[in-house]
Image (tube, rainbow over all chains, first blue to last red; front, side, top):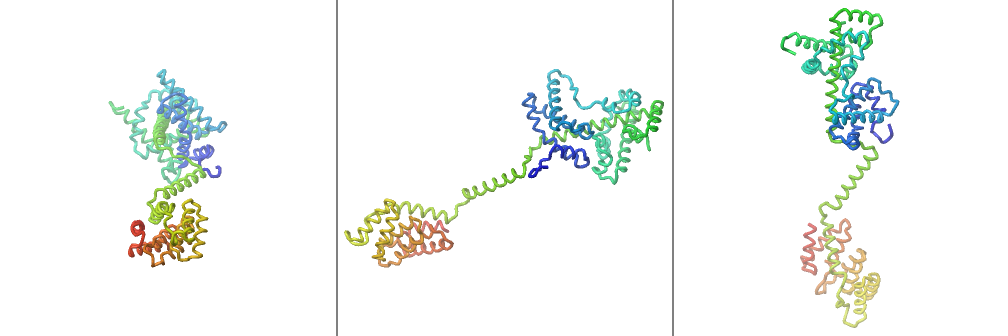
Length: 202
Length: 248
């Protein structure tokens, strides 16, 4: 980091996000703040209103967080360039959405993305089951799961490792965090199943 | 190991090749395992979507928060110095006026009003005497702002007549206007010692000069002299009262 400057570089932020734990969220927020001036640029350049641009920027940043943590962003281009390219695409999507009333191809990931991560043999087996599933109902059960379990599963959803979950939620070890997390998952499955068994209940 | 843990190990690629082959075989034949895998994928996806929505709300809150300027260290130092400078200037220009400064300003006003143009009627002796002519010459020089020449003329008179009241008065005024306060105080003090005069402004003028000089004890000394002027009803009494009021 340069002398006399506390402003973190992109490399600092990427390293902080990849390091995980408590550093991750802090660095993510700093990255968000560092390039939030893109919103004003988007308003000027794409003639979108500020809310639409801010929404595009938030989507961009969330995608970039994911790219960094998953290793998809390999650092072959500058982070700013990478971010700006995604942001421009999101803005174009927002314009298209406004003018044609069509949803964006760059909208938040779909369930298909999750399925694509499965081995081929499994994908064909569960595809039909997932298509028939009641996603809205599962969202509701997740919301009603209780704060601790919900937080834990959301951290899992964000890609936190059991070690990071243990640190964040002050468990003694990653093994204890993993056991608790799987219990929460089991709890969610039970409540989801029960709601399907009860007639007249979603 | 429960079924969800095995499924997680399968999805995350943590099973060995053999374990994976066996798991996939069971998956094809056991609907319960397929159902569990479908639930796992769906639950993880749901958690991801929920987490993303929450994170997005957090980021939106961050956007609505006031912008915190990220200044580099030199910028912060420059800002701190600017604030200090502004505070300093504010103190200089906006602070409640110090009584000594106010009194000094009153003295300036008095000097400007009374000591820039002196009447030439005062003289150091009977009209037409060499001393009287010299005093008139000195006053003329003072009124023409030729202070150094006026000073020389007055000192010359005082060499010859050290107690000449008009010469002491004009010499003191010339020194005061030239900023030579020590000399002015000496001349006015000598004037004030004259007890034979009908009207003697020496003490009052000395106090004015002390206020202008403004050395550590000058203010207190000036107050004593002003009180004396009032008490003895000397020339400058009215002005002395005003000044004392300011100095309280």
